[in-house]
Amino acid sequence: MRGDSISCRNLGAMQLLGNGVPQNYQQALTNFRAACDNGMARACFDAGRMLEAGLGGAAPRRVEVRQARTRRAVTIAT
Image (tube, rainbow, N blue to C red):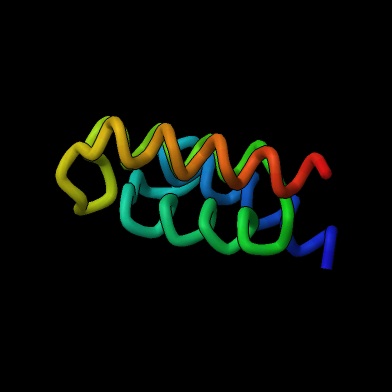
């Protein structure tokens, strides 16, 4: 499962930037969330930053996102 998380996070980063694939914020967010759900803290951070900025189809939710990202990071670290 760890390899899948890395692949999802990397693909999400490529989609976010349009690096080698068409830029697609919604797909990038989907891939970041999939990697996050499998325990990859960096992907949780990336998804949170996208939501915080309002990318991927969601309106900016700065306070909610920071709180959720912090809780998720603490959960993964412990």
